[in-house]
Length: 90
Image (tube, rainbow, N blue to C red; front, side, top):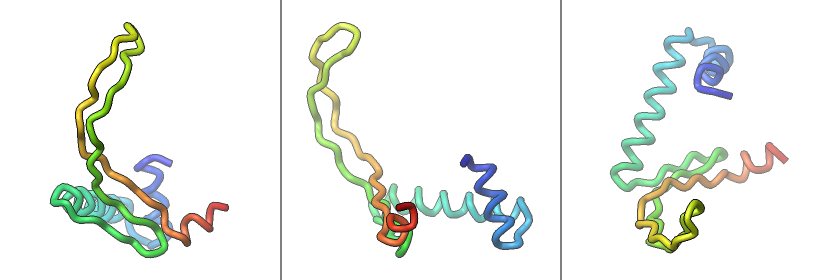
């Protein structure tokens, strides 16, 4: 499912117009981005949680040359599915 299809599904389930559903989805995405950028975690009971984790520096191998390289540390977003979501797809 892509963003356009998700907006259409949201509009259908809520009775919103497509433009209203798109605004709601965009607001959700912006809110999640803002919270994660400021270091907060997000918990949505029954759905899951988002949090920023620090991935440490590590060694890797350049697949083209076989040379060892150092992959720098970076922040990554981790999503953990909630129990209800996890069980619903079983």
